[in-house]
Each structure stands twice: as structure tokens, then as C-alpha cells.
Length: 165
Image (cartoon, rainbow, N blue to C red; front, side, top):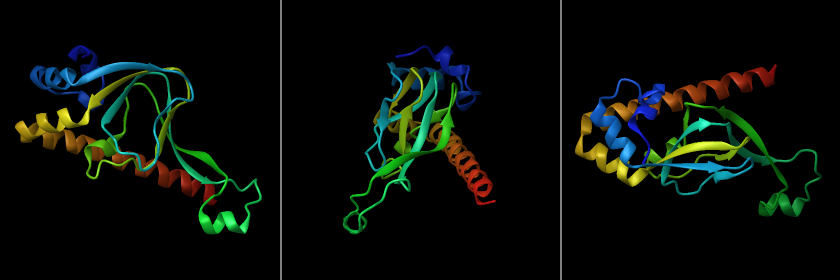
């Protein structure tokens, strides 16, 4: 468990009551990871929401590596040489792993540490129980999650437009 006062510092948790912060803090833990650590891979089941305290995390997708000649058999079977493409950079105070809160709780991308990191993890099942017990709180947190999704989609769209020009 982390201190509710730590959560209060970050916009995603801003404006929550002391009781709400305490409830979320109770289902949290802090971890430290090294650079290149993968929190999850695309299509993994997710059991945690994450908050970056220190360091940087890249949200990545695997795409075929165009610098490598891909055999036709690999193209037919899906056994292609791939590379990670960063679609979003996550820094201190930002959350990732939002797919954990949205059924079917599967990752839509991968996430890896690009520096050593201190991360807060929040247990998805325990969060769901808190939100079920206090539906107004759950609604507020899902609105904030939707805002994260909206902002990430907007950033991806802007980035893709920049590459198209």
C-alpha cells in the first residue's frame, strides 16, 4: 500500500476525497523495474492499472520490420520479424494499462520501461469492487480513464498525420 498523499499529487487522482484516495491506496503497491522491463504484451490479460512515479514507459506495438527481408512463408504463417514502434511515451504522473479497467481486460498494446522506473500498481479486481460499492466513484474514475484513452488516441492521430506528410 502507498500513501494516499502520493496519489493526491497526480492529476488522474486530483479532486478525489480523502476516503476515495485511501480506498485506492489500499489496493496499490509500489514496484521498481529496470530499463527494458515489459509490464505486459499486446493481448495479455491485464490485472493492474499503473501509475508512473519516476522514469519513463513506452507504449509500443509490434510491426513487421521493413529492414528485414520477410519470406513469403513467414507472411502466410505470421512468423515475421518484427520491431517495436512507440505509440506513446508515459512519464511521471501518468497512468497506463487502462485496458485493465475495460472488459475484456486485454492489453491493446505492449508497455516497457525505457528507463529504470518506480511504478504504482493498482489491483484491477479490488478496484472493480470499490467501484461497484460506490458507483458514483466508479463512474468518475471511468470518465478519467476515458479521458486518458481520448488523449492517447488524439496523440496517435497527430503523430500519424505528421508521418503521412
